Length: 288
Image (cartoon, rainbow, N blue to C red; front, top):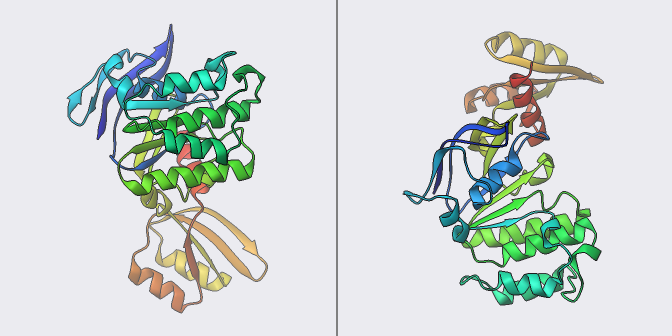
């Protein structure tokens, strides 16, 4: 387990993270989400040992590790701009020096994503560099894999192929994978834990199922919806709109089984809200 205790970091006089305290579960896919400039990349780089924390501590499996000692634990993938004009084969040769390197996985992933190791990094598109960087990390064998918006510039088939590879690795239960993204809806079926950042501060760190259950959608006849809202007067109504002969409302809060059964008997359909809607509502609570 990775535990951050009041970790702060920044660039010169500009703070990027403010006293972040959270636990990243072992053998879990964690989604790191937040708007632009929320601190996602800085947190990733602090975890990878690439950016020093200005305060606080980070422990891995109970042992406090400074930035240099975290490097062997983590493999970090970004858009690959740091590879400069090197040939991909040369970059891969450096990556293969890691004792846990998985050459068979690397070869398979290069074939799947059409990576030509003879090419130079600076002649690739951002998407091509990004997927190469992600492949290096997925084949690293490191205990902690950090994918920093690696999928953001990829076309849809390649993005979903990358998600498949993440899930394949996660199924082994041997590595922790952290995926930062602004494509919140896409990672809903991939992540098990969610960390939401905003303006360098932690908004929430929770299980993905818990985030989904924080709001509930109700759809049914207007009279039935009105009666349900009267009975559930303690719950906040996030939104309400008419859908032809029915009414749809979104409530903040979890409904127990007895309430769900009661609503169903009155012709009301209930469901969790989409992942991205729950995320958007969390940010609205921070910036009303």
